[in-house]
Image 1 (tube, rainbow, N blue to C red):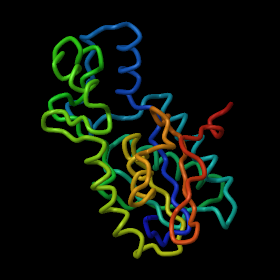
Image 2: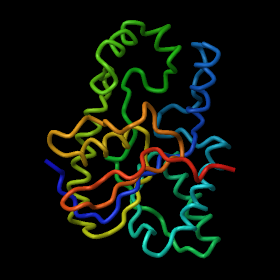
Image 3: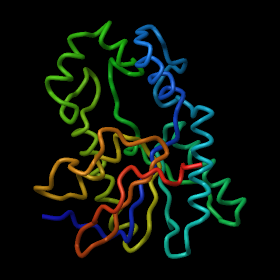
Image 4: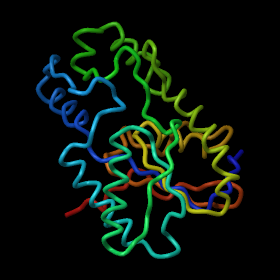
Length: 234
């Protein structure tokens, strides 16, 4: 049973690479359990230098859209890396002749909350919280909820609330969301509707600065691209 949605098109951008993404990758590569993110909270983590360049590429993609493809509404996660991604995108598109102002911000688009594991790298979790690492593997990523945090299923609940409010408010419009990798499969799950497969079309991880979009198809929304990155080539 499809999820009734009145948008013409919904595009979700994952923010560019963050300083935490960069550090997590280094921790996994080296196995160093003692690497630490500098920021005190996940919400404050900024883009890395690579992330800024990726946001610039997203801005060029935005500038290249035709009049019938350009987003008419932009809504952003409140987290610093998402807000900065949009700022860079809008600046680059503006320099090319586009006109985009500040995005609306909605806290329901924030990243998955990891509770006591917030900003802990995979090697750190394995070294300092081995029981949680084992439980995560046993339960599976969709349903695993760290103490004080959220599962991906929990993220889908707040994203459903957001989309249910967004649909009538932006009926017939093209909407762009700037958010996180946890939000993309949550959007996919909600738009799949009742009985829809759980994130069946989602990759294991949605790349930084990737594009995912859905278009209206009858009463529901049909996925067109999930986690696309051709705009980052070169």
